[in-house]
Amino acid sequence: MKKIILTTFAVLLIIPSVTYAVWWNPLTWFNSWGKGEVKKEVIINRDNSQNYNQTQKTNTDNTYCDGVFDKIITKIGANYDSCVEGLNFSSDCKLPDGANTSYNKINIAIILDSSGSMEGTISGQKKIAIAKKAVIDFVSSLPKEINVSLIAYGHKGSNSDADKAVSCAGVETIYPLSPLNTADFISKVNSFSPKGWTPLASAIKQAQTVLQTGGINNKNIIYVVSDGLETCGGDPAKIASEVNKSNSKVEVNIIGFAVNNDEQTKLKEAAVSGGGKFYLANNSSDLNKVFSDNKVYLNGYLSCNNAAVGRLSVDSSALTGRVSVCFSSAIGRESMDFGMEARKLSRSDSDLCYKSIMDKLSKRQQTVYKMQDDLNSKNSDSFSKSLKDLKSNATSN
Image (cartoon, rainbow, N blue to C red; front, side):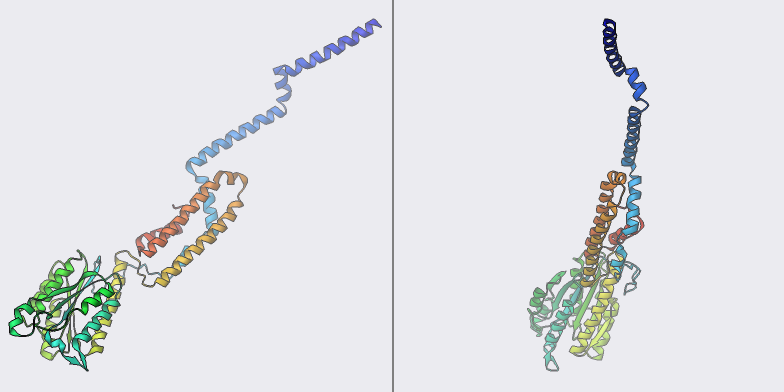
């Protein structure tokens, strides 16, 4: 009995000891668990290390995420081309005067005869009143980009011999060269009345001086409204030629208002010498038509010149407004569709690329917002470049 008890006690003592030794023996632990769970954990760690290295590489060159972004944009990217249909980006428009160069600005100087003869009437209306109204209507209808000025002569002194010197020296810039302020212009036009002599040559020379204040490389145009010839001893044809051949390259146009045949011949000579045209206007309708035809000429010139110097030829605010609305709508749809596609990414792609592709989408749409600004400022060079980038390179910033 004693022997049995001792044997049992020994067994109970030895088994836990052996178990304890095996459990805490490092060699036994690796040998037994290295074939199972511990080995699996090592594999997981190695895969994580590879993923980390791949992430580091992707963050460096972004090639993979660029590809993800391109696939989404190719599938759902907005077609901004459709928004710009109807806009004129052409830069091959031939300028009305056949020039091969473009100009920074278009400047106009109107010379209005206010000599004593302009007190005469046509169909019951004073010639000066008809001329003033026609001039006001003309300048008020011009594009705001055109600078205007007004020069008057014959409004000082009188048509008597005693006042000839005063009147002939009385050429005055009534409205200086600047963008049109309609109320101010009308006020200035109505501030003088016909009185004296006709220093036409001096007025053309002064108009050149006024136009030169607008800077260099501009299209400079003079419109003279006169009912008669030079009476102060000047030579309008000679001065017009000099003005036209000067650095300011002024074009001199003369409107003969109710003039006879001899007057027509001499006024036409001055206009041709000045590189411009002569127009005959016998009444109010004729005068308004001359200005109306020249408005068409100036609008066409401005449109072609804008294209030539790299600006959008867009005169309609409704058209530019439609494009802006279309852009905004396209951006909204693109954002929504892009978000839906981004949510379809696998978990690994989403974790890796989501921020990158959303940043690229934001930059892409910032380009469109800039195009809206370019549209408003009529900068077609920048506008066209941005549109080309959107079409040719989905990942352009």
